[in-house]
Amino acid sequence: MSKHNIHKMYQESVQCVEAEIDFVQATYKAIRGNDARFLREDFSGTGQTAGEWISRHVENRAWAVDLDDEVLNWGVNNVQIKLDAPEKLSYITADVRDSGINNMDIVLAMNFSYFLFMDRLTMVDYFISVKKSLEETGIFFLDAFGGYEAAKELTEERECDGFTYIWEQASFNPINSQMQCYIHFKTDDGVSYNKAFSYYWRLWTLPELQEMLKEAGFSHVDIFWEGTDEKSGEGDGNFSPSKIGTADAGWVCYIVALP
Image (cartoon, rainbow, N blue to C red; front, side, top):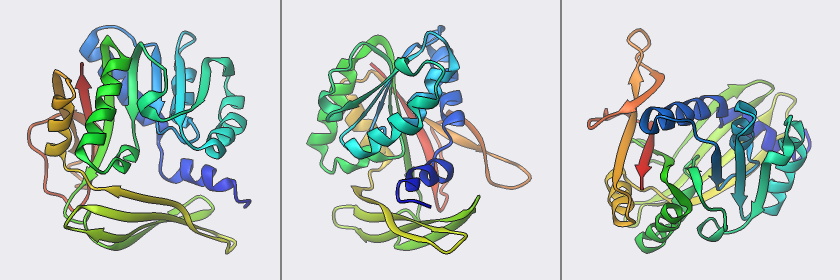
């Protein structure tokens, strides 16, 4: 595989944009009573989620915002080009706090990328900018992860189609909750992509994130927790608002914030 195929492997091993957009679309309609049309994907990477949004309805428009020109260009050539209406997806090279993309029905901050804001002041500043960019009836969707293994140094592997996905939590500093994580790939024909993706970020807790969203002016913040499959004991893929979570080794949830 060529170097650029690390983006394809990322899409196949990390993202499930169909399920993500299913949740976003259904949750927006359940809360607001109508369909959203304008979506901004912050920290977008290749813009795969924004592309999925475009594919859902002829009136949908999306903006993919990221600072990395290389990954955005890959998205233009591998995501946007495959859309029936590619002109409805715009790629923007900008700081997510000042992208100029406003009047949104939905803003997304997924794959935990906003964890790169490591101090409270910067994070609240980002949240304020999101609130200003939303329509009055807009909704801000984020995801978060945690659990008692989230702060451990560990390596996990998962077999995918044609390659192995390797997640490494290389270091964690309990004094400031900052951590170094990597994604590695190894193809079935023996090619290794060591440190294909590198993340140095802060492991924020859900109470901290809820407090900062409220501080930024969001009027209502809900945690959507995943249900449990009774037979397997694993997550069932269904997320609903909850006040009580389970003390799992690792969990992922959605945060839904209203202006």
